Every structure is written in C-alpha cells, then in structure tokens.
Length: 398
Image (cartoon, rainbow, N blue to C red; front, side, top):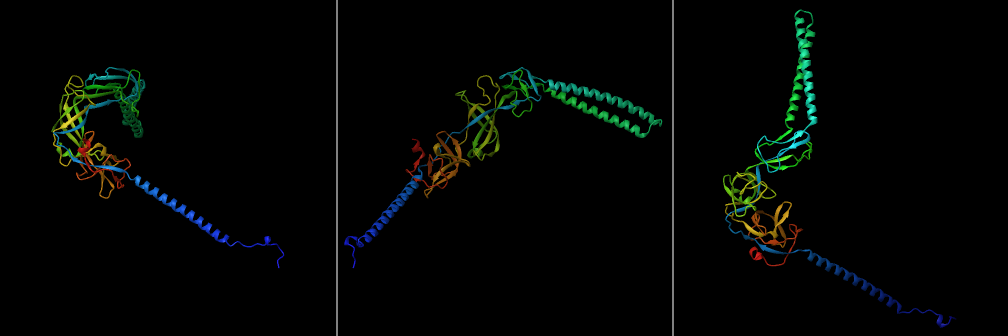
C-alpha cells in the first residue's frame, strides 16, 4: 500500500509518444520538401542559363557577284630606285649642299663629313709606311753587301741567308703599311656623301654639326634619294584573278590629287606566290614619269592609287556584307549554320573588298546559310539559335 498522496504519484501520459513521432515526421517532411524545392530551382536556373548561353543568330544567303567591267584594286606607288644614304665613316657633318626636292646627278656631292680621327689614322699610317720603306732600303743594301762577301768567302751562307730573309720581311712590312694607307685613303673618300644615281632628294635627316655614328644600329641615314623618272606600282591581286594577270598587259591608275585624270601602267612581273595570310599575289606594274616629282600630271612615290584591270568577273564569286566576315589567326572566315544547328567556320578567299560588302572567290557556296554579325567568341561547332529566316544579301542591304 502506497502512503503517498495521489498528486505525487507519476503516471506516464500515453499521448506524448505519438505526438513526438508525428512532430519528427513533420520536420522530416519539411526538410525534404525544402531540399527538393532547392534542387528543382537550381536545375531550372541551370537549364535557363544554358539556354541563354546559346547565341541567337540571324543568317543570310550569299548572292552571285554582279558582272563588272574590270577589277579595281588599291595600289602603292614607289620610286623606280630608292636609296637611303648612310655615312661610311664617323665624324661630324661639316656642311650639306642639297635639301629635299633638289634634283641631283649621279656622283654629285650631297654633304661633307669632318673626320679628325680618320685623318690622324691616315697620318700615322703614312708615317709607318715611310718607316717601313726606310727599313726595307737598309735591308736591301745590307743583303747586297753580304751577297758580295759571300762570293769572296768572307761570310758564311747562313749569315747571307739571314740578311736575304730580313730583306723579304722588310718588304712584306712595306706592302702591309702600303695596304693600310690605301684602306684609309679609301675611307677618306667617304667623307664626301654623293648621290648614287640621278634622282630627287626626298629626305634629309641631318644637319651641320650633327654627330655621325657610322654603322650604329639606330642609324637613320643622312639622305634619301629617289629615281622617279619611272615608277613602280605594287598591287595585291586576289587568287581568283591571278591566272588572268600576265606580263605585258596594261592597267589604268587614278589618284586623289588628280581627279578625273588617268594614267597607264604596264604589268611587268608578279612574285609568283599567293600569300597564306591574305590569299593574294603581289603584282608589279611600271610606268614612265618623265616630269619626275614636279609638274602637272605626274605621280609621286608613296601615292595611293586605284588600279583598274580590264578583266571579267570570274564565275563562282559570291557577295556578302562585310559584317559577316570574321578575321581569325588562320585567315579570313565566315560562320555557316549547319543542319545540326551548330556553327561551322569556313575559311574563304576574298576576291574584292568593296567596303560595306565583300566578294568571296572560294570556300563558300550559294546554298550556305551564313551567320551575319557573328559573335567574336563564336567557336567552330558551337550550338546556336536561329532568330529569323534566311535573308538574301540584296534584301538585307536594300
């Protein structure tokens, strides 16, 4: 029998265990629901991010290039001969006689250099030559006397041979000293800077008193002389036209400073190779320029010219807007949308650059869907999303 009061007796509550289990289950459900919601949101964000990372592009269709009356290319005018005159001896510029624009003849003196060091070297070499000649004369007299004494058996053969050898050595020293004097005299001739050919002085980069450091790596030269009685014009011809260009054919030139006036040049040679980077061949034309760098109607070295060849447009040339062209390390390329929904790079050859549009001579077909204004980061094989229907080039530019 228990003596404690009823209020002090412990009786377990049967409803606590089910309540605790229910609360734990509810907490598990809440945590699991949160995790599932977070995973679902993360997956949705990833899917949306991946979808937005795919670039949206518009495609265009290349169109055949219109037939032209001729091929027009930029050209660079150069002098027939162009020489930068450097000093051969060090010193100081004593005086100059011709300035830019002066017409000069071959051998004409352009400037004189004061060379005190070289002058002293020449004086010493001449003194050394005089000493060598004097020693040679003495050795020659001595060798002759000992040869006479040898005939009288007054000296031995050994002693006579020694004197003859001494004469030969002294003669060799005379030749060496004479060669040194000749070398320094030849250098003395370079104190006078002369024109190598008939032409025009197109540059003077020195003045009186300037230090002349002959042979220095940063030597900019003293004068530039150009022979402009005849001019060379260099043009980069696209590969599609190289088979039609041959020596003897003529072309017409226009320059901005003579509007409405044309000049005729003759193609003389090509470099015989197509550049890997530009896909073009260097072509040289020549033309007479009798008035030289003066007078109306003449061209000047360094002029930019438009050169027109009377050539038909080759078949298969396609036209694209310049915005579709990409410049990559391997060369000029365009991006083509494939049937797999991915961009594929095509390296092409540009026949002519017309500014807002370009003509493609190779690497592309008329049925290709070309991506217009592709992103700079677009890679070969990258997935893209089509934003609009294929548009022809003419419709886009109109």
